[in-house]
Amino acid sequence: MRWSGQELAEEQPSTLPGLARLSNFVRSVQTPEFAGITFHEVLAKSALNRIPGGGTAMPFGWTINPYRGCSHACAYCFARPTHKYLELNEGKDFDNEIIVKVNVAEVLAKELGKASWGHHPVALGTNTDPYQRAEGRYRLMPGIIAALADSGTPFSILTKGTLLRRDLPLLAEASGVVPIDLAMSIAIYDDELQQSVEPGTPSTSARLATVTAARSLGLRMSVFMMPILPFLTDTRAHLEEALRQIEDAGATSVLYTALHLRPGVKEWFIGWLAEAHPELVPRYRELYGSGAYAPKDYRSWLAKRISPLIRQHGLERGRDPITGGVRSSALGRVRTADGGSSLIAEELPPGAAPTHSLATEPTLF
Ligand code: SF4
Image (cartoon, rainbow, N blue to C red; front, side):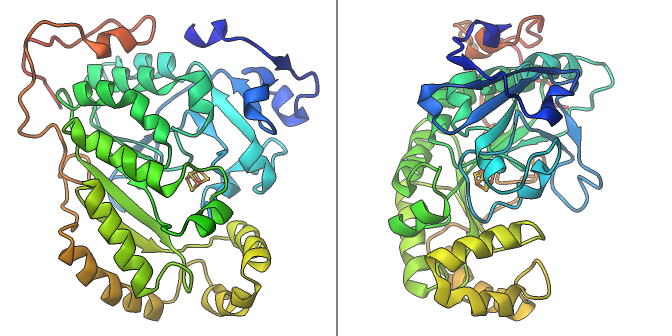
């Protein structure tokens, strides 16, 4: 397997007890390039997760999560409570103890190869970020992308990771085979605030540059302004500046939501707020005191403020009937039939025989 040849800087004998009990646990690793982070390598038994109620309430019914936990460390991250298993917590452990499914691409290729697979749209980045820093070491995404494209499965990727740039040529090829929906999450256009509340993420300007790089390869890419932080990023000046920069970067559309604070996340976020903006704590307690969502009045107020700006910048979001997201890059696009080398074939996980030919029209569904 491709990951097994990686150099091991330091294997930790003091693996977390909960993880060590797992039959599929491989090892815990720390390396000097990722100070403070421990990678816990596991062998995934399955790669595709079915979302209960998916396809009705949500535009996707299936997800893949190559990692659990996320070193991007956003204080508002809604996925934090998912880390509360195996004796890991939703705070610092979520940021620093990263579970890595080292065989995820190989397992995925097998699942996609089953006759029963329905080629439903699959979403990546709905729980933790697939292009977080660990991906630079483990390089799991090329195999995942190749397996999805080769099987004719439409997919979407949502990320804050500029490491996505590495895979843009592969994604460009894949977008000629299946519908793909790409989105970069960029909510904060104030560098100091961004570094404070999302300390492990690439800068706003680096993420915008990644959007431009994707567009230059003909890939459509939207920007998710999620979350809008009440009293911090909802001023007219901030929203106008954000949308100006997003339009300049060449993004195809914008989607936004106000901050959502579910139990577990709320405590962690308020802890950050108490240090960074203590004056706002009472106002947030008023907004989020009785629930996870900002009150309806606030959401209506925000919609009235931001919707005209989104329209003005030509960034309204269309709906792709296949991926559920923006209009897919693949629709209406003609694939090349030059018989040249295929990045998809090169990246296919071991054991996954190429099933599509560059010279024939794709069968998507
Ligand atoms: S990048 Fe996404 S998954 Fe990662 S910490 Fe931030 S919000 Fe959570």
